[in-house]
Length: 338
Image (tube, rainbow, N blue to C red; front, side, top):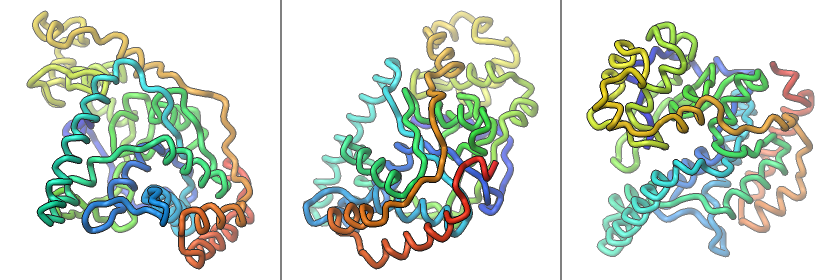
């Protein structure tokens, strides 16, 4: 769904160098989905190896991750989703139906050789498979990079790790990280300063943004609990919200009445039961058992996995590994950086 709190937030534009030497938590499933969506052939088909296995997500993971580390001195910790909460099932089913609709439209566009339309449908029609996630985890392990398996939502786990101080920033395009209590959220993290909208065939300039939760709450003169309630009124991945209520109106209502419980009856009735979802944002399932360390790069096994199994260019992979090895020589643990 995508929660749009932007109209009421205070953000700070930053340069990517602002994150230099820092560790960032990343919702791995969301990031892999972006790679899967954007790394495609001109007609919208996913990139594959000779056996027909999808490689789009592995290409993005390998080259984007290593560029973050070797060129920008930024260190990612990938957090993988666990089981979604039961109240997300409606949203997941909605997404499944939408993907099927887009796939049908993509096939129709391919049949009439309308490749621009085909691309615009393709970037939104696929989902991650268990095999893709297994391969992504294997790649990260062979690179010696830390990964964390969340018991539930990856973004909740990522926010927890920043709150705890085990990482510096939570990187996400979604604002849900703020609802989970992430103190520092970075949006629009890009190497080029340009965001492409392949579904529309356009692009626009963007600047990385830093959202400081403490500053947001102070500027809006609300508490974190009230921020969550504003989101619930608008609608989240877990509830539909109240029709006609956007961020500004939700903020006005919460400021005036103090909480959802004090809202006029007709609004409360339209919202429905919300307490379980509110509690999930406040206290999501997270694991406290993780070790964030830079491990060994298994060069031979990486070459076998990427080049022999998935037909990656060996020369390019070797060049990436050389840069990583040089970078990691003096950097053994996450504690060295924070």
